[in-house]
Length: 356
Image (cartoon, rainbow, N blue to C red):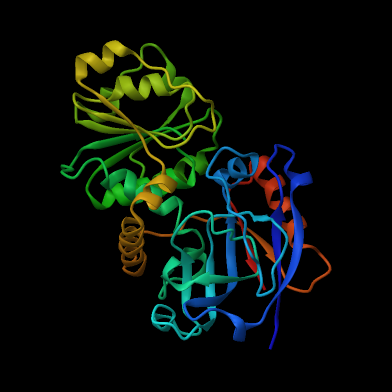
């Protein structure tokens, strides 16, 4: 039985994303896959900021992808994250580890997740059975980033230590607050001015000890000890490279670390060299994509830890906006995804495409 699929594709990079993206239909004959390949059906695939940077070029460039069992012209498929269900596994030793109905996610980046079906190498999939589709859809990037940010740089957290982070309303920050709390580590989240009390209360529900506005945090007289009572601020997380970075560094205790993992707010990081010298501070860059390529097993281990945290109820998934696509419907998959892009630009948060 031939499977019909659709994908969000592009043939060149650029900034005019609505013009770049189109829909490509394809067919898969499950009987023609290689022994260690697997046919998988998409259940949910997110739209992340990193996906947009990839489309513009110069950031984790996407390889050309063959969509079905018949050759297609040169093209790329957008998306780096998603959850799939195994439809058919090949007869090879790697594929035999998977069975029909298993929930799986791609191990390596640049998979090209925005497609309703895919042919995948079995050794490039991680089994995530036991999670809900909502959890599995987004486990690969935001929770994984939060987990590694807290575990890759500090291994001897002490009860009462602090993490301070900008981009305080982001998905990553909400997972950071949850996971840090499991280590008895307190979180201070810095947010843009004008956030409603309901949103601030929600951040505290996820584990933030304190929520501070940009204007208060950037005031020249701001003193972090007002919130920490002198406890160690060991880690500062910079997800935006905005005006708060200098005070993130200023708020660190001796031998603290600034880790930058995003730059949507700008392309420059500025802070006091005097603070760095006086306190013996360390600044680092974190990039999940590079970490995964360098250490694929580290990604697998991270996902295993997160699955256990989800299953035991120690963390909860952070809500996001859901889009719907049905294979064979009149609406093209690329049009549905572009609606998600519009929602994201309008400040409606993380967007995830669900396949019916």
